[in-house]
Length: 109
Image (cartoon, rainbow, N blue to C red):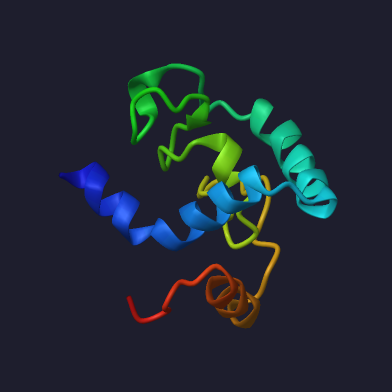
């Protein structure tokens, strides 16, 4: 039940990452590549299913369980490591609302 709650809570940034993974844009791919380099050095990187929220989606972040291919491409996401944030959000709250509107997400859902 906890995994479903985490997915629901993060559904907007997950959908943003999925969209950006399907419809590739050069600037987003550059950001994802820079983030990936930092994630590859992270001790929380999970290359197995044991830390992934959804089985079969590895590699994933061992802290939040998100599939890296989507997390890295979601400009509203950040590194969840409380001790050493490897990368931060790329967009402001206002820009995130604009992104959500473009992909058809209601901010009040």
